[in-house]
Length: 307
Ligand code: HMG
Ligand code: MG
Image (tube, rainbow, N blue to C red):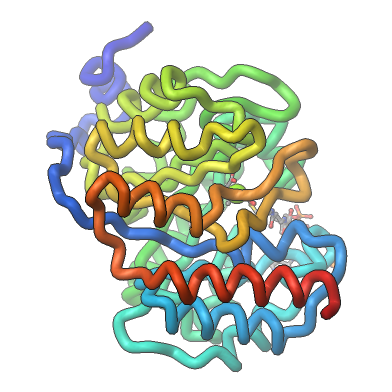
């Protein structure tokens, strides 16, 4: 297998970043329940409930919330009200409200909705790329390039996600080299931040370490985020591994909601309640109020049960 430095020079020579593990005791949580959580629920919740969720999360102290997705309503009907939700949330100063944008049409929606940040979402596996966004990895990168450039020109923060970084529901194993290759392309086209995603929750501490070390060979640790689905209950130990590598940004989802309609068998994201407990026990600060998060989890579960 290629070493990280060797890989970096192959991928994007101009983008080799000296990655020094962070010793910072503060962790950024990006709350993704309004998007990743609700996109996978069978019933369509009214926009007012989604707005209520986002506003509760803002009140809990999150500095970054993934609100919705400007994607095809045929592909993901749960996100069809993206513009309405963005129009109705109460914005708190200092909170980054982000949205998913697979193409220029998505970016137009994001700009009209005054999103602070966008996310282009690619994959390290060809089959998942085809199922999720209906194109190959290479085509997706070409599609993202103008989206990233236009978003940056408008002053938006840009996240690039690499899905299936620890395994693919259709192909099985995915190599760290494949993950770093896509991550390197996303950085080189201008993404500010990389989200490395265990879409189906199959990572172990060992495979998580291999993949993250590969990514840290090409990206500064301050730009790397971990997104862990918790299918086999290993999200927290995988996050522990990331923390040991100096990564200080993670996605989380209240009540453990989440999943991708195009990743069969995967369950929700790591529950915000659990990651907050774990981080506090390890001495990390997030600025997020656990009591409000717990209440929000109970509230959103009740909404989903129609109570
Ligand atoms: P396509 O069929 O190749 O694109 O879909 P198209 O350009 O031919 O358009 C098809 C239809 O979608 C057209 O409508 C377009 O107007 C419409 P029609 O003429 O058939 O009525 N359309 C749009 N509508 C609204 N907003 C847009 C947009 N673009 C096209 N931006 C496309 C390609 C990417 C659009 C489609 O496959 C899609 O929207 N996929 C959604 C994928 C998705 O949202 N997946 C879940 C989120 S990713 C995830 O969960 C993983 C993550 O959590 C990390 C992890 O866990 O791995 C982030
Ligand atoms: Mg996800």
